[in-house]
Image 1: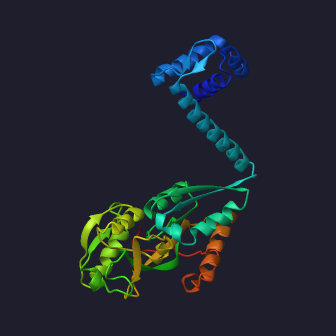
Image 2: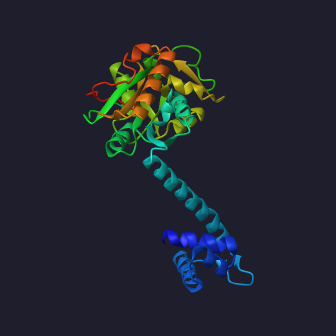
Image 3: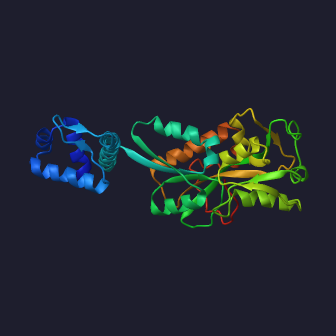
Length: 316
């Protein structure tokens, strides 16, 4: 199947007349009929009822609606590509770990979207994936929670997010700060279960620092799934304090007594990237961190230029 098949079918579906569709496409009618037949043969379904007047089958209506959306999206991508090449628009690719959406990232996105000349590409990915996407040029900046040792990528911690324990409603540990020893007695929902090192390793290390082990009741890969399992009473879990913005009646949060129980939010970008749009984005990040009383976690250099970090930690 080629793009021309979709364009030919769109013309026929809109006119319901092979002759008029052929005129629109500047094509003779017999070749157009053959192209539509080829499309139907490849799909293995009839898209048209060849009656008078011509009609779309149910499958044809479905295929038309979705193929038109694909063609319109492709045309927008092509138009924006030309505008970017001509300097009329700018493109910024952003990779993000899901839990960073509870921090400064949404405001950064809002500021970027307020500029009509900027085209954003948003991709959900963990930091290990962000590093590869940065090096290949698929994204320009990443928001994650893991340190990576790679000279091609610059990383900067913009915030140390305190960890809190998520508990099901009515749990006896709600209402007061809790110790790691208390948590070690509870069944635990650990996440994520794949792509290591990860936030799961960070949680295990926190307990190991106190010579404790986690009683894992369930492993899962998503933050939202872990919270849902907590609400169902499967166990408890540790989440960044910023996740408390997610209000649910069936769970509650308690702070930890351990002041070192934190998870960093880390911005990553290509070493040597001096583009004006990236520098503007980094400046906004620094401003937002400062306005949230996080100035101690941000260097005075608003561009956030810093040597690559040479150790590893964790992520969600």
